[in-house]
Length: 350
Image 1: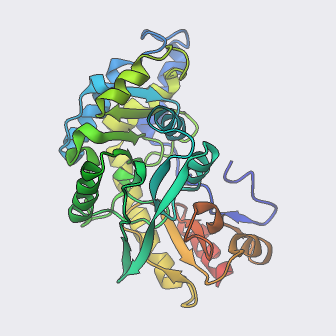
Image 2 (image 1 turned 135 degrees about the vertical axis):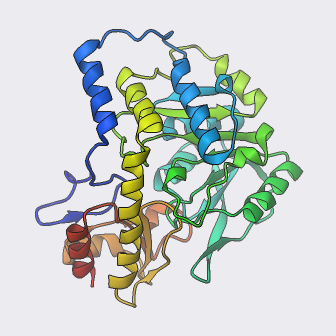
């Protein structure tokens, strides 16, 4: 998808896929599965395999000190499906959803496409990074948190998350926390699962797809700390939300249990690349080095950047106008590629 959309001579840097080879443990796990058995999986068709949910809980505990209950988690096809399921159960058309904006374009499209209204929590430049101005949340039903934040790359601090947790408690809100970029946090910044602060109001969405470049295998996990929503989702017909497929489960297990040496090498490359972007971009383009993710949020000072840059520079970026309020003058660049490709992109932008 990433490369096929780009026209002749155009370098794609838009959708969040990395240009790195598949991690060897993942490739080996999929080869073993293909060579052994592609029949019906052993788990019940509407229940995620226990081994996947146990691997999720083990990873959350070992990396982040959070101990989620595997029995409160469920597999989904991807985060967008999980988000739509949750919004269907906890909101009604016309309800307001607080969202740190600009925000991941697919989430913006989901919220507005389901006839929910976005209450912006706007990003404001703050030193070398960003801060978000928390508005009055009393008119909301839900907070949709992206941590680390896409597209700015902000990794929320304990103080920021505590302020949000107190506001959610005060206004009786459910927090849907997208933590799919958690493994892509650069030191000294530290990812803090929101469920460690407000466990009974938090629904956590995650997947191995971003950190391990598995967007096509379709496997995500949602953990339901909010009991009423958990019961509502569990009560629905088993086939309604689909099923985890054997390749998705195998790839995710291999990533979470055996993929960290590969991820450590990738993080070194991404750490280098995020600073290369800062060094090579012209001063007329605003850029704050992200604290997480492999996404650069670029400020061009005027709208229509992605179309112009594809046409005039031969670089395909994600247009900021699709990321909701505050994105109009921006474009998002994916720097998860090899150094020669990145340098050529930046040369063309300059």
